[in-house]
Amino acid sequence: MDTALLEQQLEETFDHAVVHHGYTNYMRDYELIIYATADPRTGIPPAYLRYLFRYCVEARCETSVAAGTWRESLDDRLLDHENADPDLGGYVWGVKCHAMYPGAEPVRNSKAADRWSKEIGIDFHEVRVETDAHDLTLVFSDLEVSEVPVGYAPFVTD
Image (cartoon, rainbow, N blue to C red; front, side):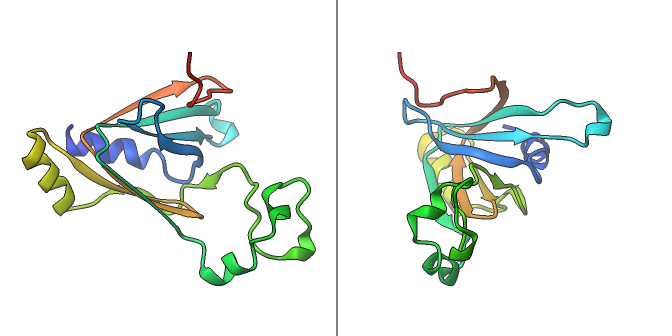
C-alpha cells in the first residue's frame, strides 16, 4: 500500500465518529466503522464508512479515559445515554460513538511493521487511531475504504 494514499485515507477520518471497531467475523482483518458527516451547507450527505485494515497482525486497544474518570464511571446506569443520571458524574459510556480526535495517523519507522514485513514478505504499516475514549494501534498490510448501509451489522453470520 502506498504511504501517501494511506495518509490521505486517514486524514479523511479526522473529527468523525467511530461507531464500531474490532476484528471481522473471520478474525483476520480489523474494521473501523465511521459515521462521516460534513457541514450541511456542502450538500454532502452523512455516510457510514468501513475502514478495513487487511491482514491485521496486531491490534491493541487502550483506554484514553483517565483513571480518576474511570473510578467515577463504574455505575452501570452510565451505559444508557438516554437514562444516565447526570447527578452520578463520571463518563457516560452509552453515547454509541467516539469522536475521532485527534484522529488517525501512520506510525513512522515502526519496528513492528518492519518485523512483520520481513517475516511475511509483504509490506506492513502501523497506524495509531485516537478517539476521545480509545487509543488503538493497528499493524496491517492494506487498507480498503467502502461505504456500508445504515444498520450494517459486522458480526452477523449466515
